[in-house]
Length: 263
DNA sequence: AATATTGTTCAGCA
DNA sequence: GTGCTGAACAATAT
Image (cartoon, rainbow, N blue to C red; front, side, top):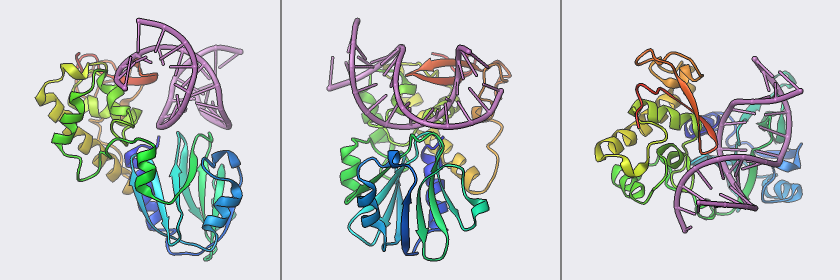
């Protein structure tokens, strides 16, 4: 679930809760989620520090401390940050918990344990090491950049959108929505896209991310015109009332409307 | 009981 | 090198 809109929402959540509080203890419930350090290193790097600010790049959330090391969260399929005080608000699957001076805890909650925590001393070096493409929510990500990148692609559009080393932040659900809004078949070859369609896709990347983020931040529902509200086989297409179909693209299930989205 | 789910990574093949 | 497929990772719901 966590794609760029969720990551930005998580950023807003952490920014409005867990900042500027001394970390009194780091409790590691499951070592498996530590991707680049030992429990000891994690504790030594963060205990006594505080989270001062956050930033997002693609599907990674960076929690900047005043110290030399910063924390990086990757949420896998089922992760989320949870800020709570009392036991009855404690999430079900905390894998690492950051206890704060004010009595609250910021937990890295991750049911399926595919999420990872990293320590890094440079955000930029981390992004480079992961070979991530441009973050699609960045102001630098203009149409020229997008078109130039697409020039070098030979595969299917849905796979390309989801390739984090190509573009950072778009996952399975967002790619389905971007392509539905653009009326482009998920398996259409990038080389077959016209300049016009490329521009439509580019615009819809922003529309989908902004709409999803707005819905998350303000507890609103997605518009009924979104395929994400009808994302199951046999559901009714909100545009033509035809049947939504499921296909496998790049090893993932893609949902689309065969009538509205032609190759 | 079998299958699908979300994201990443890697092996194997064209 | 690129792209596609399938598997593996974990745990849950249907």
